[in-house]
Length: 125
Image (cartoon, rainbow, N blue to C red):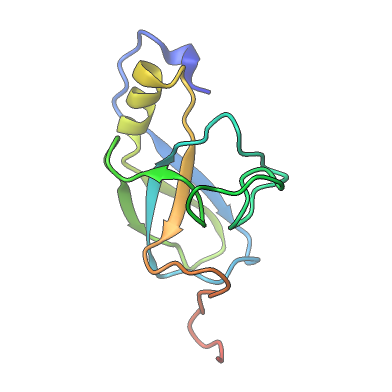
Protein backbone atom coordinates (compact mmCIF):
# COMPACT_ATOMS: atom_id res chain seq x y z
CA UNK A 1 0.00 0.00 0.00
CA UNK A 2 1.66 3.17 -1.22
CA UNK A 3 -1.33 5.47 -0.60
CA UNK A 4 0.78 7.55 1.83
CA UNK A 5 2.61 8.82 -1.29
CA UNK A 6 -0.54 10.42 -2.77
CA UNK A 7 0.29 13.85 -4.14
CA UNK A 8 4.04 13.14 -4.21
CA UNK A 9 6.19 12.89 -7.32
CA UNK A 10 7.39 9.33 -7.86
CA UNK A 11 10.79 9.29 -9.55
CA UNK A 12 11.58 5.60 -9.19
CA UNK A 13 10.64 2.41 -7.37
CA UNK A 14 12.25 -0.98 -6.91
CA UNK A 15 11.39 -4.42 -5.61
CA UNK A 16 13.83 -5.78 -3.04
CA UNK A 17 13.82 -9.56 -2.58
CA UNK A 18 15.82 -12.04 -0.51
CA UNK A 19 16.84 -15.12 -2.52
CA UNK A 20 17.19 -17.85 0.11
CA UNK A 21 17.98 -20.88 -2.04
CA UNK A 22 14.62 -22.62 -1.68
CA UNK A 23 13.61 -21.74 -5.25
CA UNK A 24 14.75 -23.37 -8.45
CA UNK A 25 17.81 -21.24 -9.12
CA UNK A 26 18.26 -18.12 -11.14
CA UNK A 27 19.79 -16.77 -14.30
CA UNK A 28 16.58 -17.02 -16.32
CA UNK A 29 14.55 -14.21 -17.85
CA UNK A 30 11.50 -13.08 -15.89
CA UNK A 31 8.86 -10.36 -16.06
CA UNK A 32 6.91 -8.40 -13.45
CA UNK A 33 3.26 -7.70 -14.23
CA UNK A 34 0.43 -5.96 -12.37
CA UNK A 35 -1.75 -8.54 -10.62
CA UNK A 36 -5.42 -7.94 -11.41
CA UNK A 37 -6.62 -9.48 -8.12
CA UNK A 38 -5.02 -7.14 -5.58
CA UNK A 39 -7.75 -7.50 -2.96
CA UNK A 40 -8.49 -11.21 -3.25
CA UNK A 41 -5.24 -13.22 -3.33
CA UNK A 42 -3.86 -14.34 0.01
CA UNK A 43 -0.24 -15.00 0.86
CA UNK A 44 -1.10 -18.15 2.81
CA UNK A 45 -3.34 -19.56 0.08
CA UNK A 46 -1.84 -18.52 -3.26
CA UNK A 47 -0.68 -21.35 -5.54
CA UNK A 48 -0.24 -21.84 -9.29
CA UNK A 49 -3.94 -22.77 -9.56
CA UNK A 50 -5.64 -20.86 -6.72
CA UNK A 51 -5.44 -17.25 -5.58
CA UNK A 52 -6.62 -17.84 -2.02
CA UNK A 53 -6.35 -21.60 -1.43
CA UNK A 54 -9.93 -22.15 -2.61
CA UNK A 55 -10.76 -20.12 -5.71
CA UNK A 56 -9.08 -20.62 -9.09
CA UNK A 57 -7.25 -17.93 -11.00
CA UNK A 58 -8.90 -17.12 -14.33
CA UNK A 59 -5.60 -18.17 -15.95
CA UNK A 60 -3.34 -20.72 -14.22
CA UNK A 61 -0.31 -19.03 -12.70
CA UNK A 62 -2.12 -15.81 -11.87
CA UNK A 63 -4.29 -13.10 -13.37
CA UNK A 64 -2.24 -10.18 -14.63
CA UNK A 65 -2.30 -7.24 -16.98
CA UNK A 66 0.43 -7.35 -19.62
CA UNK A 67 -0.15 -3.76 -20.76
CA UNK A 68 -0.83 -1.26 -17.92
CA UNK A 69 1.63 -0.41 -16.62
CA UNK A 70 4.22 -1.79 -19.01
CA UNK A 71 5.74 -5.03 -17.68
CA UNK A 72 9.31 -4.92 -16.36
CA UNK A 73 11.74 -7.52 -17.70
CA UNK A 74 14.80 -8.69 -15.74
CA UNK A 75 17.06 -11.69 -15.19
CA UNK A 76 16.61 -13.61 -11.93
CA UNK A 77 19.62 -13.42 -9.62
CA UNK A 78 21.72 -16.55 -9.22
CA UNK A 79 23.44 -15.59 -5.95
CA UNK A 80 21.74 -15.96 -2.58
CA UNK A 81 20.92 -12.83 -0.60
CA UNK A 82 19.18 -9.53 -1.23
CA UNK A 83 18.61 -8.39 -4.81
CA UNK A 84 16.73 -5.49 -6.37
CA UNK A 85 14.62 -5.17 -9.49
CA UNK A 86 14.47 -1.54 -10.56
CA UNK A 87 12.18 0.27 -12.97
CA UNK A 88 8.91 -0.14 -11.08
CA UNK A 89 8.02 3.55 -10.76
CA UNK A 90 5.14 3.25 -13.24
CA UNK A 91 3.56 0.55 -11.03
CA UNK A 92 3.51 2.97 -8.09
CA UNK A 93 2.20 5.86 -10.20
CA UNK A 94 -0.53 3.58 -11.61
CA UNK A 95 -1.46 2.34 -8.13
CA UNK A 96 -1.81 5.89 -6.83
CA UNK A 97 -3.86 7.05 -9.81
CA UNK A 98 -6.03 4.00 -10.44
CA UNK A 99 -5.85 1.35 -7.70
CA UNK A 100 -6.40 3.05 -4.33
CA UNK A 101 -2.65 2.98 -3.72
CA UNK A 102 -2.32 -0.81 -3.87
CA UNK A 103 0.67 -2.18 -5.80
CA UNK A 104 0.07 -5.88 -6.50
CA UNK A 105 2.66 -7.70 -8.61
CA UNK A 106 3.12 -11.09 -10.23
CA UNK A 107 6.63 -12.26 -11.13
CA UNK A 108 6.71 -14.89 -13.86
CA UNK A 109 9.59 -16.67 -15.53
CA UNK A 110 9.37 -15.90 -19.25
CA UNK A 111 9.31 -19.62 -20.05
CA UNK A 112 7.18 -20.50 -17.04
CA UNK A 113 5.22 -23.71 -16.85
CA UNK A 114 3.77 -25.45 -13.78
CA UNK A 115 5.94 -28.08 -12.10
CA UNK A 116 8.97 -27.12 -14.21
CA UNK A 117 11.70 -26.00 -11.81
CA UNK A 118 14.54 -23.83 -13.04
CA UNK A 119 17.97 -25.47 -12.74
CA UNK A 120 21.03 -23.73 -11.38
CA UNK A 121 24.35 -24.27 -13.08
CA UNK A 122 25.82 -27.63 -12.11
CA UNK A 123 22.55 -29.29 -11.12
CA UNK A 124 21.60 -32.56 -12.77
CA UNK A 125 18.38 -33.31 -14.59
